[in-house]
Length: 187
Image (cartoon, rainbow, N blue to C red; front, side, top):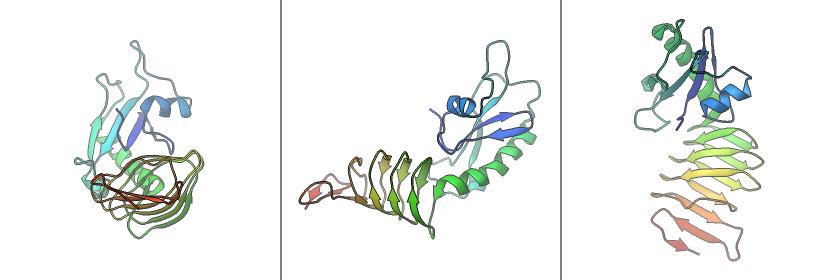
């Protein structure tokens, strides 16, 4: 499974998507040729924190090639440097962190590891909400995969059940429901 941050590298450029971590979907989104058994056009890359925690400083993230065959033009040092430069843009575009205040997220793929987001709706796809994150409302066709840590979400269904110390307040039911990470349902 493709992990954040996933990238597709061609000889002189690095591609990533605001919408997905799937290498196949990145290739499709940018209209790039996909690799075949006869020819390698690009290289699937993941630059990720070793422990999976996106709050880890990005200069400590691990660079990894996510395929077996490499093209003749591949130069590991050159292309790793290009990916690490592009990682700064990926992180700025997709990660809400401590100190940030975002009014609304309506599209794209996001990771909320701190800070505050008032509304998440539309076609937004949030991989995870954790850390000290505080989210106001989630509604419409927006989706959230995981909520954990000490994150607090006050919002609407569909919401996953929280993990750890996270709290979800579901106002879509009367009276509203409160779910805690230890499985308790409070009202």
